[in-house]
Amino acid sequence: MPMVLPRLKYLTLYTILGCGLIGCASVPANSQHDSFADYAESVFRHQNTVLSRLMMLNEADQLPDNDIFADTEQAMHDACHLLNEYAERESDGEHMGLRFKAKVQASIEGCDASIQKMEALMAGLDQYQAPPHGHP
Image (cartoon, rainbow, N blue to C red; front, top):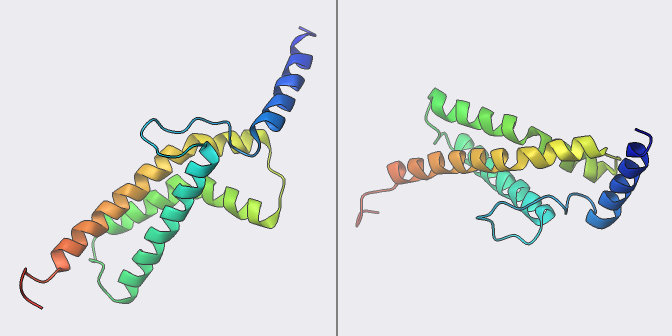
């Protein structure tokens, strides 16, 4: 058993030196991103765009008053909370452990899927609110 610990130390060192922040994780097969860090940043930016649009729709009283939007928005917040926490810690210059980074990596695809669900709901809302073709 004493050989496992030195191997783990070297593996951890290799992971930190060779991969950087979260660049070693795999990118989803259908993604156009070169690295996981690019994918994570793209998902974070996409979420911020969707949230901004939700706020604008809410301020204009254009969101339907039903549970579907509220539940989908809450599901997006829940699915993306680790990514948001990571971004906040990164912005504050905090050190993050490898376990936390691994949890963030494991949550990104679910976060991305929940953002896409919210966006699809908003797209349906746009179609519903659009004036009939040919009418201003």
